[in-house]
Every structure is written in structure tokens, then in C-alpha cells.
Image (cartoon, rainbow, N blue to C red; front, side, top):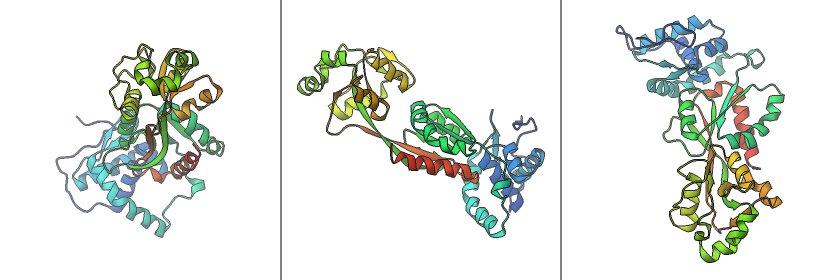
Length: 321
């Protein structure tokens, strides 16, 4: 059965009468607009065409190349592997041709297209969104999504986001990733728990065993940050079960400040609490574990000039984070 596109019309699929051959230049322009915008409707707005016209052109291009190009999603369309490869081959020549011929839409006449940015909730709320406030005041349309890195990168590949702040570098060459910020991890607890363990001196003298019996607060059952800290700093496996799990590091911070137990947190997240004495750093290793976050961009999303503004502002702001 053939899918339907987001507007209800018949979706695209490889047809029995497909005839591979040179593709029409106008069809390639339309294809690139769909690939960049992530939907037929958005591409139609960018090109000044009707949505049925865009759908018809993509069917024609599929017949010419003999391949399926897009799959329907709840929000927009996702490019097939062949479409990703095709876009990578044609983006530079078509953009260069458009610049030479002047076949572009003036910025003042271009319909406003939102920038879709995604990343971890705490980074988005404490770093990215405040940094982007000036652009919003100037008219930027921003759509923010929070979540875990792997699902967000899958959605980025499917065209649902323009940019993703990722806690790991994506595999493969389909996505462009640049280092954005480093997170230093801190072993911390409220003062009463720190006093019970003897603080940094206690751990330095007796090792992490002084924490045995203290409740651990973390954001996931598999203790990813705490386990990494133990492996990097103490050279051993962390063998305990979380007392509290909260799928948001801001919630972990709030619980630890309230005295629920100890945790390993990014320093930027708990810097104010450490400075005020609401939290105590339980151990200060010479070589603390650091994780690099990356700003990842979907191929073709640069057709929206606001994406470049968001990217450049985040990269500039990150130097002060």
C-alpha cells in the first residue's frame, strides 16, 4: 500500500514503470527544498508552489531516478538513504547555480520558517534557550524539543529537527557535528551527607567506600554518569543501585540539594549551589571526567538562513559556558 503524504495525498513510492535517467533540473530544485524543509508543504511555501504540484514533481522525479525518495512521517517526510545521498551530491552545484543566476527568494520576501532545535532538557533550558533570546526578540521562530541524544539524532536524520545538541558524536558522515561545550562532572552531596563521609579528605584517605550506604540519586537506572565517574576517577566499577531516578538532571539537582543523597552532576548545572554551600564537592580529582557535547546539523537545513544564525550564536555563546 502506498503511503499518504502529510496532507493526505498519495505518498511516493517506486513504480513499476520507473525509468532511471538524467533528472530534470527543476525537479531537483524541488527535491532539494523538500529534503531541506522536511515536508512537501514547507517546500511548497519556500518555492511559491502548491503542495499538489510539489507532490507531483516528486512523483515525476521518482520515476526518472527509479528510486523511492521520501517516506511519510507523523510530522513531515523522511528522506530515503538514496535521497540523502542524492541531496549530498546536488546541494553544492544547485546552490552555486542559484547564486549565479539570482534564482533565489529575497530574504525579506521569504516566508518565515521555524528553526527546530533539540537537545538535553537541562542544556536547552539553562544554556541554549537563554542564549537565543536575542534572536527571538528579533523575530526568530524557534521550536524546541528535549530528549535523549540517540532518539533525537534519529529524528534529526528523519528531518524533524534542524539542529541537535548531542552528548555524543553521531556515527557516520550523514550529519555534520562540531564540538560545542565540555561538561565536567562533579561528585556532590548536601552538607550533612558530606560531613558523614568526611568530605574530600575522607574519600582521599579511604576511597569511595566511604559512600557505601548513602542513597544515590541519578537520572537513569543504569547510572551512566556515575558509572563513568567511578571508572575514570577511581578505576573501578560502581556497584550500587539508585535510590532515586529522575529523567531530568535538574530534578536530580533539586533532590540532592534537598538532602536525598549524593550524585554526579555537570559542574555548570550545580555551580551556584557549590558556590553558596548548598552542595559540597565530595572529591576533587586532578583529572575530572569530561564529556563533550556536539552541535549536530541536518544536511540541507542551511536553506533556512535562521538555522545558520542559531548555529553561529550558540557556537559563540558556548565559548563563555
